[in-house]
Image (cartoon, rainbow, N blue to C red; front, side, top):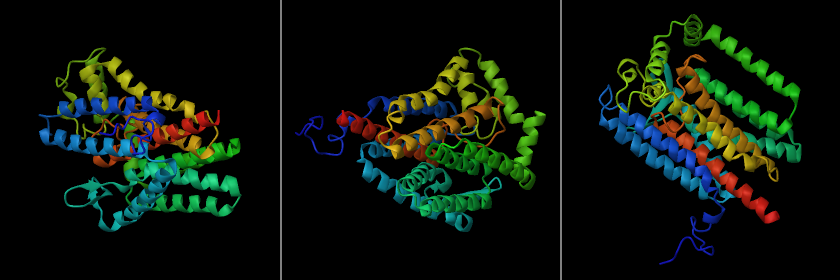
Length: 367
């Protein structure tokens, strides 16, 4: 039987095994295990063991996608991401027509056996497309590529306003801004984009009632969910009350998504919460070697933006649980329940691992 670990093996796994940055797999797998513990802890509340089974299915598919994307040749990965981007963008345009409403927002499309949230799945591929068009503009100085980026962002903003999903919209504006700043490295652009983001948030506050409601509750300190979350964190203390022994999950809705971080701290303690919080910037640091090797501007800027996307979404979820920012409904990467969000993070993690592998390989070969 052929040994896939031989260096002359030309299979997808064998031909990429020695160039993989294997250390980058560690954190997604640790987060996956923590997510399994968190979802298992919810059994017996409003959720049955079916939630755990579905989570395992979502996780298995997501890890397969992560590994598969990490093994693809870089050119094939970029083509795959472009196809994903176009496909998910088309689905996003169909949400207002065929989507179904949950809590006043129409974000999901149902396919009988499962539902997907296109705006979640689009994030990783969209970062790569934003970055690629900026890269082409830098190389060719053709304004067409820059205008294409602006047009795509405008379409996404319009479609997300229809849902409405202001939290996700701000994420897209943020990643677009990061890509622009990385490529143009202009301080004036940084302040301009920051000003525009604040202006947009102010406009959203006065136009959308649910945005005003969340911000007002946050400023007034009247959010009962956040109060329960803080109480649970205090109850957990340094070492927690033990797996399955927490009480927050019985009294707070959406405990499998928005406030899963507080549940983890209540059951495993503040030290464990700090460990979980550190994992996301740690992944950023592990990918830093590739970011600091600027032999490929597109790869280094894309890696940076994708790592930023993972970290900022983790910060938003954790910040909501500990009352740093208003609740937004953002999931905790690879820990919260949700097929679309988990698959989205798998695409992001897999892309970073792949680009890190190729960047390291290119650097090593040039030496």
